Length: 369
Length: 241
Image 1 (cartoon, chains in turn green, cyan):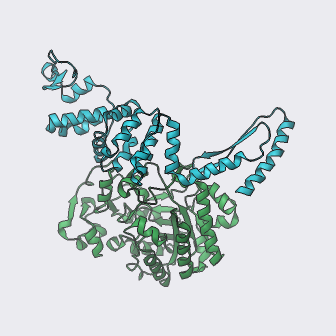
Image 2 (cartoon, one colour):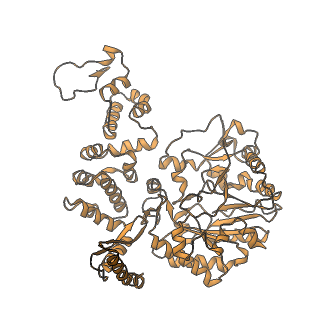
Image 3 (spheres, helix red, strand yellow):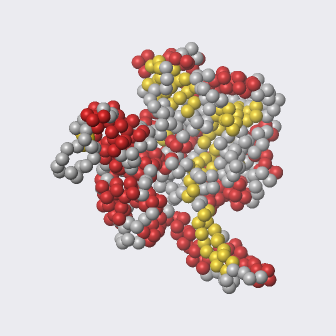
């Protein structure tokens, strides 16, 4: 907790949120001199400079979210195969600092925002009247699900809410190791805690301010011991001269510490980013980064990606690597084109029975039986 | 033309009086400047802004957002950084940027440098190269990235005025793995037993590369024959893949 108190230079609380639970908690945690009550978001909107983007990670802003909380996974676009789930964004910006982070081309507000009206999200979910349907709801798209959780304790509230909806699945996605704050919460067995993972060499070089690989895997073990499901996203895989050795060590670490029945599924993806993101990455991380120095080409969806042959080789390496440990490991490719699926697995994700399972939200339930 | 003693046009004139638009018609600075210059390119606007800041700093500060908005730009720190960067480049480069109508985002690579002055010789040379806008924008990005990756600026200077050869050289340095792979495939494909009147070449399509095949055929029978012969190409490709 102390690291978070020190990390944030200022905590802005919009007057629309003063009475919210999360604002009251901030007021109890942060020294009074760091807190400022405001009527509107500080700063101006617009394309951020590198300096402003970096500073935004140190300025916390609590306000109500004006709009609809639930959106479809960004993979669900024409031309992209998708893992088919909903996303709940309870904040915007991340306190960690990955060189490849897509938020660099996405955020145009100079603060790290946390929405105070999580109850509205729960109301939207209730209003779906789909308690008997299978839903998969992910967090962690525009804010890390757990890195700030000691401040918000949102994980506890979400786990409690989802306890009443056992057919729904809640997924946290994080690069932190912050799990202790929710491990004691009784749950309905429908919570998946997932980690984006990379070899330690990449964590050290590209995922600044995140938990080490060993810390992430240790946190996953803690979750398993409390009955939570866990998952790993090897994403984004980053090409570098020793990528085979690096990713082999990652495969060995996961397969050595976990079994396929403990991890219902994993996903794998390679580096991708919007062309306009290249500039701010270059300004913030220089060219001594595997990401900024990568050889990338425009893909059919407009994002920059490695050459398709390299992507296939990397995917195949991971699939084969896990298969050598145990053929029961289940891995799907996230944010990837159907062509790459075809070339790597020999089947379209929409036509293969085995792979189709992975796009079915019920897979988590099926795999846990 | 002038406004409150600030000369707005006719900078080359040595004699005569300037019409002061404030005195004559009570025009605001913005009215005067947009009347004199209905259109301004980015570098011209940046120089105007720099001069205004020098001559009338309070006015410049007050009008910054409006001045840039009048020419379709939203003032923000990033734009301010870009203005500062472009003002550190040689005027020949600025003129080339304006002539080719570069956007402010096209200039973003300059922001990765401590000072654009580090690459002044290249910027001057770039303005003299026979490159289209998109090629010039790409060259700026590749050269700055290669320079930041440690390649000496001397290596990165154009050797002559062959723009296409220069772009190939920069690409070879910036994307060595895929360029070498594509070149290897190009050589391999050239050695395959292509049927007469069938041309095949290795081609890059964005993030994928593969064969582009052109067939000249005169009849269904001829077409069928050529397709049959192409099977040997498929076999050769399978052996190499």
